[in-house]
Length: 306
Image 1 (cartoon, rainbow, N blue to C red):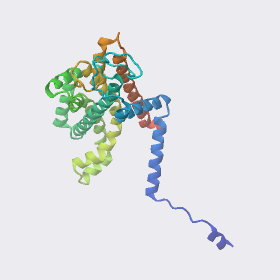
Image 2 (image 1 turned 30 degrees about the horizontal axis):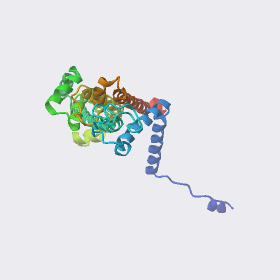
Image 3 (image 1 turned 120 degrees about the vertical axis):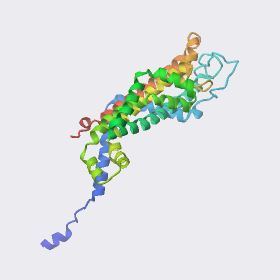
Image 4 (image 1 turned 120 degrees about the horizontal axis):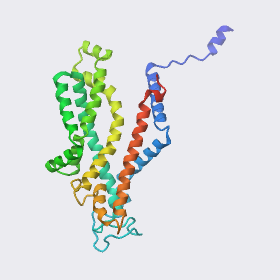
């Protein structure tokens, strides 16, 4: 009877180590998302950012007019059935320029932060890992850059380089690099003395291999929050340069340029300046709220980890 029972019993399920790791990674991702969106305000920020991204991607389908097309018969029109937000002083459709302006702002913001993050994280790891004269040179240069107001640096670089979309992305990246260098260097100083880095050195791994395989994974996660937040700040800087007349060149639509041009016509058609200004504020707020959610999700105490 005992042998019969043994034959009828199901065989034990054996789970491989790879499957256990996949399940653990899946649970970790689910816990990350759950913690990130645990607050409604973060969900609102994510929805707001998604809205602006969709507007930027589908701008040609949303806008009914060419954002640069001028109509001398429709100058400074108030909102109506044809021009939903009216027209500006050149007869251009305000709604079309607003929609295409979202694309310009997001492209410059993301591109500038991506350039700054790559350069800043790389320099920060080099300074923190090697130390000595290399660390001193890099950090003194960063401190000198931070001592000069960002707006002055941007204005000077625009005069030298130019004001195309790519030029502005590079210029805005320059003033953002020091923040990544300082944060990454501080984290690299802690990581370089860890046991796994020492073991990699004893195994004969090169400095480049150690930086990429061991240091980078430990510093990149802490920079994600700063990346998301800096996109909003970069968009504000681009809007400020365009407002001052040295940003995106006319007739390319830009929210900062729209505010600058529309401020003289607030009594005739306030939507020209007010609506793009509100859009800049909403986009930056959405990015900051999402950054707060990512920061909460990366905090082990809030994720329930020890």
